[in-house]
Amino acid sequence: MDCGCAHRWAFRTWGGALQEQTDELAPAVDHEVTVRVTHCGMCHSDLHVQAGGFDMGGGTLSSLERSGVRLPVTMGHEIVGEVVELGPEAIDLALGDRVVIYPWIGCGACPVCERGDDHLCSRAVRNLGIHRPGGYADLVRVPHARYAVPIGTLDPARAATFACAGITAYSAIRKLHSLTADDHVAIIGCGGVGMTAVALCSAMLAPRVVAIDPDPIKREAALRHGAAMAFDPGAPDALKTIAKACAFDIAGVIDFVGAESTASMAVNLVRRAGQVVIVGLFGGEFRMPLPMFALKSLQIAGSYVGSLNDLRELVALAQRTTLPQIPLDLRPLAQVNQALADLAQGRVLGRVVLQP
Image (tube, rainbow, N blue to C red; front, side, top):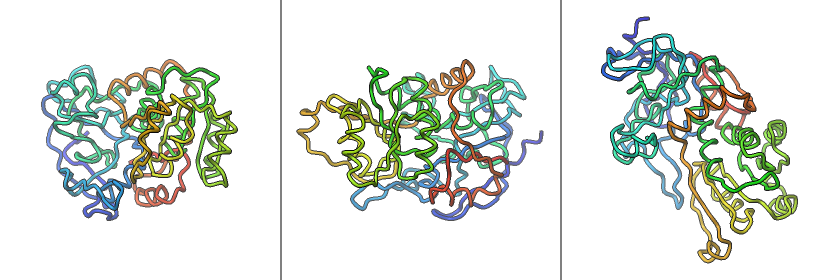
């Protein structure tokens, strides 16, 4: 295959629509790998990337441009494809291998990266789909072969979601501890990542999963994918209704929205000595009386995507056993702008997966 040019969909202005462009692709060097994209999942965080930043609360917006992201941007960080080119030092892969790409790439040399936690690197961030061209393209260049995880016979469309939705849910769930089958775990937000967490949580921990989402279709889907109960957070007295239905005994809450209202609901729902994990990036500020941390023995953690090891473990888990499957909406890459609009308007059930 000729790897001289990559055909991409990129935005050239912050908030602008994605447009087709063709870029020269130099031959792979050192440990680099070129992958022909067959499937690329679409993530809600792509909307924040396209907009140029995140709501930090108090009227303050972060700026991806100030943090070093340069236009044009080719998004897409849930990438599965076929290896079509290997640099001379790229080992443990072969041409034709089907791989899922770990996109959360750091400097690659610090102790954090060496232990597999590139996503937490503070030296240099090189995330695919943000800082480097991602999977909304026919070809993607991966800076090191270790970030390409073979998927064998796994469904490539489903494996693509492992690179963000999968490991984000997997990593957040693993931050909950000492749970039993009698405990309740609430999942706030049942979009693509939240729905993945509903399914994985039911399979991994076997607690009583409580799904919380304003969309009745997503609540129904959550019940089909392992939730024991589902609630509308906008219903009258929702907080009391949910707490009472769970006998005021919710051991953990994972907030996949990350808004002021959902974070407030999370800390008010969880029992004493309970755990809250905040994942979503919707934005705003977190407010809570400081004495309540001690009086309630509350544990609050943030969780940002997942590690390279998380991706490897999730792929291995999927190869050993059949995981609960969230809905997938496969669309041609040429429909990327409409897909982003549908995602922004909440019209997506599960995960959109684009195909070049």
